[in-house]
Length: 190
Image (cartoon, rainbow, N blue to C red):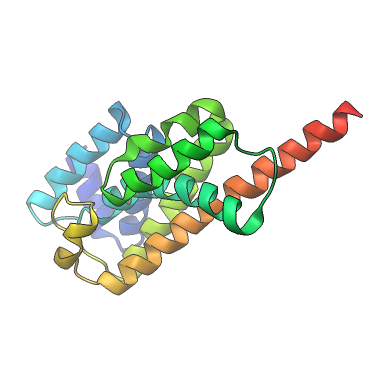
């Protein structure tokens, strides 16, 4: 596996493939076994300075931040009714806070409620952010996803842009898809 990864990393387009794979594997189960395996592989790559941990960190924090941002944006800007119940609204704020401190598990209640919406959006949002960070040459060599690790980031401003794009993709995607499904459900009742 190491040889395959090293061969991919040595190619210019392979760097993006590795970034996408790591980000998606990390975001897939929000702290579960796939996430932990991606973390272990990324730690091994970062230990010998072969590949930074940027994709792994983005994949870990974009799902909870994106889900939390979806609840916040919906409550204060979009104001779509019937897409989040009271329990999920409360979980959204918890998810956002957990994302800020680097904990992926805050997004799990949303994935349990609607896995076919939440998980694909998390995967794509994390992959987009990982590609952007790779293009911008953002490098994080330490496993510190929390905001207090930001001073260690090589390329903080591009990192924040990449993070924001991924978070907004997850947030707005969740709002639009859930609103569409809620409207479809209402119209089928009549």
